[in-house]
Amino acid sequence: MTGKLVSAVTALAALLVGTVLAASEASSPLVGAAKCGGCHRAAYQAWRNSPHRKSNAGLPADKRNDPRCLRCHGGTDADTGSVQCESCHGEGKYYARRHVMKDRKLDRIVGLTDVTEKTCRRCHTGDAPTIRPFDWERSWSLISHGMDDKEKVADHE
Ligand code: HEC
Ligand code: HEC
Ligand code: HEC
Ligand code: HEC
Image 1 (cartoon, helix red, strand yellow):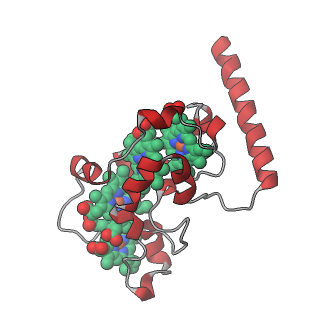
Image 2: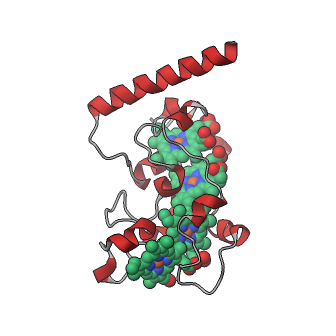
């Protein structure tokens, strides 16, 4: 009973957030890595040092806008291109706000996704040009990041 009420209220809140944002912002559902990085500095640094940041820039010049490649290598836009935060965590337009992010149910309702090995395998398929099959332990260790305790209480808005 209480559980149901809580989810109803949460869903309503999500709807309101959605409506207000939809009315006030441009149409792209992506906010870009720099925006996430304004609050998540450690994660942003880790990403900047990761191969994903160059996933578009690393393509031959004539392939950087090739739709066959963009699905996995991301676009050319400086903010929202490449394989960036939202390629794994989900499009951030509605959840990338402090009060939404602090509510672990609400942020998922409005777009934050749980990132698992399956997420990686959307792109790290058997077709990728590598002789090494995708290995979660090894790959995650190369790009690992998270939140430190300071970040959890810091106010960046
Ligand atoms: C205005 C600041 C702010 C922005 C912008 C922001 N976050 Fe957050 N994020 C937070 C806060 C605060 C938390 C909650 C930390 C806590 O209390 O544990 C959080 C939590 C998270 C979590 C864990 C939450 C959960 O429910 O599992 C993830 C993942 C995350 N953020 C990713 C992102 C991504 C990706 C972006 C960009 C699309 C982003 N954040 C933008 C402030 C922000
Ligand atoms: C299904 C997803 C997928 C598609 C589609 C895709 N790639 Fe990739 N590509 C990858 C992944 C994943 C890697 C990294 C492989 C590794 O090193 O483990 C990669 C790596 C590469 C590399 C090597 C990068 C480096 O810095 O070593 C090149 C070059 C490349 N891809 C070119 C292309 C081109 C050109 C296209 C379009 C014709 C394309 N890829 C389409 C997933 C994809
Ligand atoms: C290649 C996929 C990928 C990219 C790109 C990526 N992340 Fe993550 N992120 C993960 C995975 C996997 C985890 C660990 C599992 C989890 O906690 O969701 C994680 C964890 C996190 C956490 C900690 C969540 C928690 O509950 O403690 C935050 C915050 C976060 N990422 C923010 C970011 C930000 C900001 C960016 C971009 C600057 C980014 N991530 C880019 C895959 C990614
Ligand atoms: C949207 C597509 C996409 C997703 C999702 C993705 N990757 Fe990648 N990843 C790529 C591409 C493309 C490259 C090649 C970048 C380059 O070298 O130019 C790459 C390269 C890498 C590399 C460097 C090559 C290597 O194998 O040593 C690691 C490590 C990696 N990814 C780990 C991960 C992990 C872990 C996840 C899931 C949490 C993940 N990736 C999710 C597209 C993706």
